[in-house]
Image (cartoon, rainbow, N blue to C red; front, top):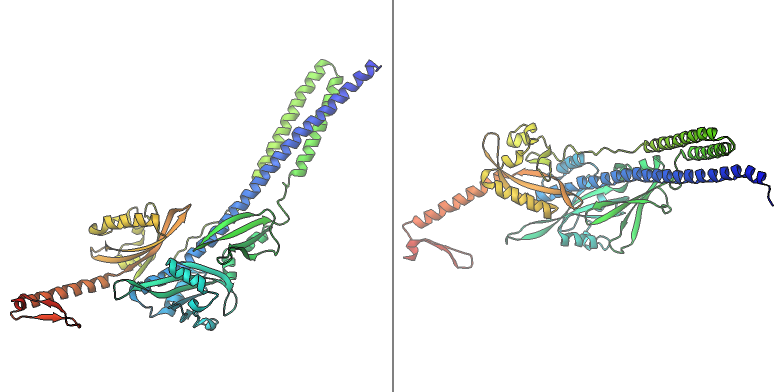
Amino acid sequence: MKDPNTVSQLRPLLLSVVTFLMVLAAGGAFINLAERRHADRHRHVVEEMGASHAHLLERQFARSLSSTLALAAILREYGEIKNFDALAAEMIKNYGGINNLQLAPNGVVTQIYPLAGNEEAIGHDLLNDPRRRTEAVKAIESRTLTLAGPFELIQGGMAVIGRMPVFIPNEAGGERFWGFTIALIHLNDLLEVGDLNRFVKRGYNYELSRIAPDSGQKTVFAGSIDTDLQDPISFEIGVPNGRWTLAVAPRGGWPSSSSLPVQVVLVLLVSSLVAALTYETLRQPAMLRRKVEVRTRELVETNRDLGNQITERARAEEALHESREHFRRLVETTNAIPWEADAKTWQFTYVGPQAVTLLGYPIDQWYEKDFWTTHIHPEDRDFAIDFCQKSSETEDNYEFEYRTLSSNGEIVWLHDIVNVIRENNAPKSLQGFMIDISDRKRVEEDLQKSEERFRRILEDAPDGMVIARQDGTIAFANEQMER
């Protein structure tokens, strides 16, 4: 039979051990929660940083490949580009990220700027090259800008190529395939623009991959290591006719909080302290026991405050905020205005300096609310606004013509080429070029008037007159001839 005194002496010790284990378990649960929050914050930082770099690459694609749209618009308007080298040099300078621009009438590369180092690509027949034909034909069938690559170039090096199929009006009133406008971007230059080496400097590994259009298999074409990433976070990069994936993971796995050792020591210290106080409390009179209980509560509160401080300190870890870079100039031509505007309000966020020369209004007026809608010719206003609104919802690229009023009241005809930038499948912003086509419209109007005068002369002639076609059929006969 156990001695009651021995049991009485062991009771405080047993209760203090139980208390120690309970406080230790509560502290372990707190540490686990703090570590999970730390991991979530760390992943959030990586998500922000990766999304920023993915968006930077996506914007660079949109900016650089817009050059093919501008070249295609000039070809559709004039049927040729006489000063290609000068225009290409200006575009490469202002768009940035482009290594060379090419023209490929009927699918055969005939012009490249700059030509130096790219001579071997002259004469390259895309439609008869087994390695390029599939993507080239798909571009023609889709009638939209497509991105090919990355792949090894004929002249050496890895690159991606944007091809814009160009269709121009034919004599029958339809359209015919002219060829391609092409923008080539070296892969190394693209990675440099995307600043992906910053991941390596910050202790992360990355890889860029795509789904090969022929095999449907994932292909990794760039990365900081040769092995697979462990538990990476992936970011989709929208490119014409496809998707790229940027994957990021910490080097050596996801780390634990730097304050973990401090938290463990604090929990052990508090658990031991509470157990010791429990042991002493059970051995002291009731008054002393109450004082110890008060002190215990103070220590528990202190532990909670320390835990909150640890959490706040963890929340204060540095987060990467990448600034978004707006391009300042698109292309400087004598009769075209580069612009960018909000897709919902149509308020301009950027207008090229040549707007002052073309329409006469100061640049600061262009940024005012409703400037575009209020300066459209009244007879074209409803059509232009309705067409722009509907096309922005359904099309990625569209064109239309309308009249505007210059600062001196003159009518200026504009051909507007619009590229829609989307976010979550909704229009976010619009980019494009306003091309002055007033001269062409005046020529068309003069031609129409001339034809009308000629018809009146024939109709009022006192003699019978007839106009016959080459096949002998009669195209026109006046009243005298009929009589």
